[in-house]
Length: 54
Image (tube, rainbow, N blue to C red; front, side, top):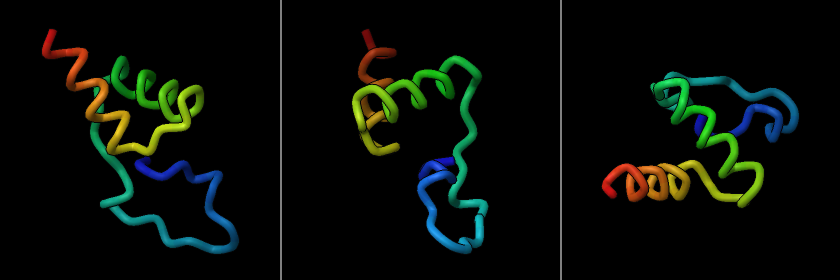
């Protein structure tokens, strides 16, 4: 989920575009960056891609 579901207030229709397919390791990394560094999904994705390029 690109936008954490717990952040929705009231009713929200979940769409396919709200999700991204990730391997388990990247999924965990994204959650860590969202939680600990308060990044948005796209920023976390860029950070992970840069790390993987090394």
